[in-house]
Length: 359
Ligand SMILES: Cc1cc2nc3c(=O)[nH]c(=O)nc-3n(C[C@H](O)[C@H](O)[C@H](O)COP(=O)(O)OP(=O)(O)OC[C@H]3O[C@@H](n4cnc5c(N)ncnc54)[C@H](O)[C@@H]3O)c2cc1C
Ligand code: FES
Image 1 (cartoon, rainbow, N blue to C red):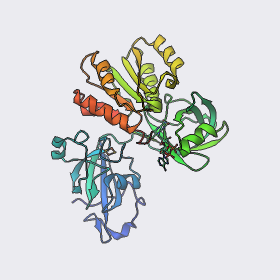
Image 2 (cartoon, protein in one colour):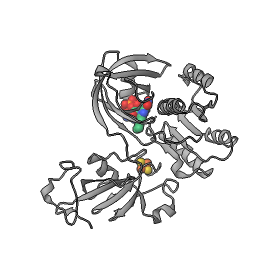
Image 3 (cartoon, rainbow, N blue to C red):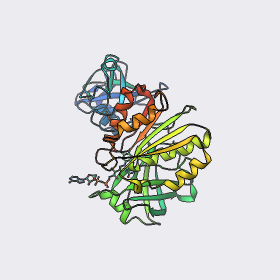
Image 4 (cartoon, rainbow, N blue to C red):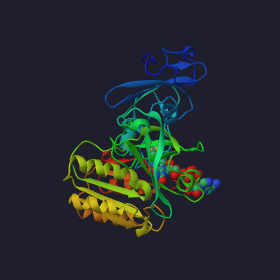
């Protein structure tokens, strides 16, 4: 095992550095080195505890490993073990096929650290996360349960992010929740679309009580389901307010390449849920290469029963080769992912940071 190099992350982690034997990567009390290498070969080493999942250890050490379901279902947290061993936990066979297991791929959210480990993650967050305080400058209830609000930083400072990313927002109540950014990068504000959930602490506050002039905290950006740099046709699939990150990707993609083929599929409970129709119509009038298909699903934001319909629509345009960007409830994203992969989409062409199970 190579010596443990803390140069990039001194002071991060739970163990005082002197208790760790940098030669073996272990300490007497169970602390070990976790080294995460990104796609360009840049390594970050953090201190972790045996018994933690790879994901807990990385996030605890400040390494923004991508994740979605945290339960072995979605495959977003996949990484490759370069050195050392982990106890592999449960993994959905579509999230981690057996041939990938033999290539030492593991799911960070269910794999347990037993000693020092080095992993490679090709899709580490690319814009360094930062903290900022922003002021709410617009707040508009678009439907009976969706609010669109904008927040701006002091002196119109621009917060850098990539289309498709999200931030962790601290509300005036102290509650912290992830919300995707719905506008294009480079603007002096961030736009958020929030669905008010029955019994949802934060989303109810945002819908009912957040006001223009309130301050909110921002940490981020995070997320790896970001627009890739190429000019191939895009399929976007969203459920409910999963439209927000797709909107950012859509506007940015068409601003860069106005003729780029972009087919957006939006799962909603009914026509009233299409809360950005006017702006989408305007976009469609300017960019003939853009199309919107609204698919109704009986359950809010869920794709149950609608995925077959989606597949039929996509296949009508030829083989599904990618890229596909998806956002919304984890159940919907997982169903769409499985269906697309079974239909032949290469795994690395599916990009999603699911919202969680409770949408
Ligand atoms: C990467 C990412 C991006 C996201 N982006 C967006 C976005 O752009 N827009 C958006 O609207 N959301 C987004 N979310 C989801 C968002 O972060 C919140 O999870 C969501 O708003 C719900 O938060 P809440 O505090 O209102 O609900 P919570 O209070 O956290 O409750 C969540 C759900 O659990 C239910 N619940 C609560 N307590 C109980 C209980 N005791 N028993 C049974 N059920 C219960 C509630 O009814 C609710 O449906 C994103 C999530 C992630 C991970
Ligand atoms: S499989 Fe690990 S976050 Fe979904």
